[in-house]
Length: 167
Image (tube, rainbow, N blue to C red):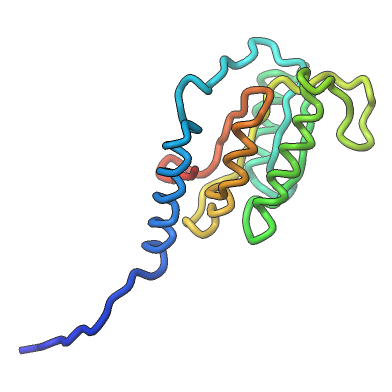
């Protein structure tokens, strides 16, 4: 026989993070940030594609290889950002904002050091591989979600693997 006397219990680890994720998801959903009407059609022939990810990410290699194979004629502008860790949300927001300045709605331009007459970015890819809920936590940031909603062009998010979910 075994008897346990429990005076208090609390969730730790992924349970607490998952609850935080669900609260933010419900908040943003109630504001309409996930409405299907917000989705825009993808451009048939983008003049340039922006990519936000870490320069050291395998996802960057995978995306660049696929783009080179399938649409080698379309210029790609990489806006590097950490995709994991405490600094990642701010870096993702900064990289997205830099690409927004290169969109047709913002008049095109350059991303620091590029030609001023570079093709406008008509589509943005935000990518990183899978990981634990802690590894992907920067994609559950409210400011990242609100920055994505403000995009003047369609954004495709390829974050995680088939069993990963982020805001």
